[in-house]
Length: 76
Image 1: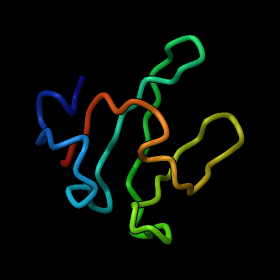
Image 2: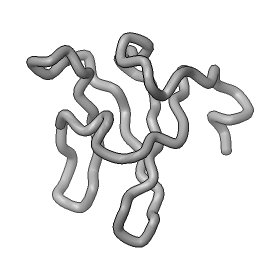
Image 3: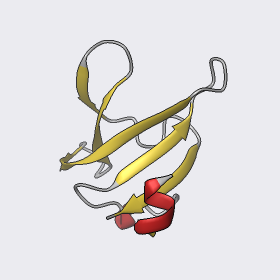
Image 4: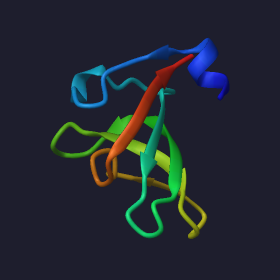
């Protein structure tokens, strides 16, 4: 994977470590499928960064950062 070779790998648990433009990958529960999103410059009411992603309903900006098990967190 490009990011594994060329980007910085960061914490997947520290909310403060996520910055706009970071790439996050998750493992979805249905079928154990991978999913990728980009951290937005906006945050939810609780301070969690929003994620820009497309999970089959078109591009969305949602509070899903910790909704699924995070596999990797990259900054390029």
